[in-house]
Image 1 (cartoon, helix red, strand yellow):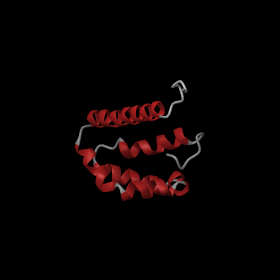
Image 2 (tube, one colour):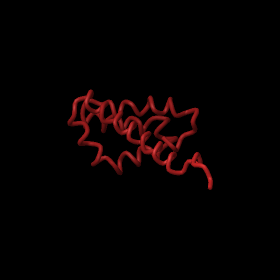
Image 3 (cartoon, rainbow, N blue to C red):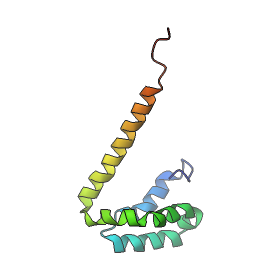
Image 4 (tube, rainbow, N blue to C red):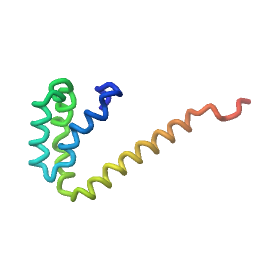
Length: 98
């Protein structure tokens, strides 16, 4: 998502939902092909290329039910946010200077 401007991120995320909300790996592959053929895929080809490179790591997630995948995705977001807080606190200048 870093390859798009901040104004287009929501619309681009909606276009990608068909891939990660697919019922199984075959449906996700079809959604990825459809994304690549779409206007978004043509404009942001790096996203589809990134998906293709990491496809072997993505496919095992489709073995889980949709509800479990949603929890996995949310846990990842929480972990990233927590990591940012730790990083921010580590380099914070709120410590008194002596």
